[in-house]
Amino acid sequence: MLQTNYSKFLLEAGTDEAGRGCLSGPVVAAAVILPKDFSHPFLNDSKQISEKKRALLKPIIEQQAVAFGVSFVWQKEVDQINVLQASITGMHRAIAALKVTPEFIIVDGNKFKNYKEIPHKTIIKGDAKYTSIAAASVLAKTYRDAYMAKIHKEFPMYNWAKNKGYPTKEHRNAIRQFGATDYHRKTFKLLPEQTKLNL
Figure (cartoon, rainbow, N blue to C red):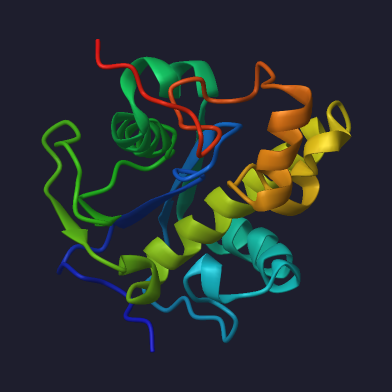
């Protein structure tokens, strides 16, 4: 059972990201402030619910949220700053995109940096515990999946519409056969046989 708020503040934003472990495409983050009484029987950590249910939830969250923001950190920037910093940067940008300033921020995971002077709490598996983080996880995932389906049309051989850029056997075999694209993260170990250079 998801809880509504962690803090005593009314304007509490939940934030989460999608795509950290992918070999290609952006890290997408979302931040959501929900009304205190918001609930939906489908809402849970986005990884626990089907694509169909996520698609149903997306417009409900967007219509009923007090505010929501979504941001994309593109693969070149992920390569420049590393994936952890990309996740935090993405969450900061999503919070900045909120049309209402939150009084408190709850973050999925255990790593975050202060955003302005707003107090925050990191919560491991927060997307399965709090409604606003679960809602943010649904938005981050649906926006990212839609983008991966779009670039799939450009490079269908990698089957991003299905694997979303994650390191599946099929995705890695396609990299082996066709090489990497500009959408691939060059600092990631794209193939298991790659050796890392100690520079």
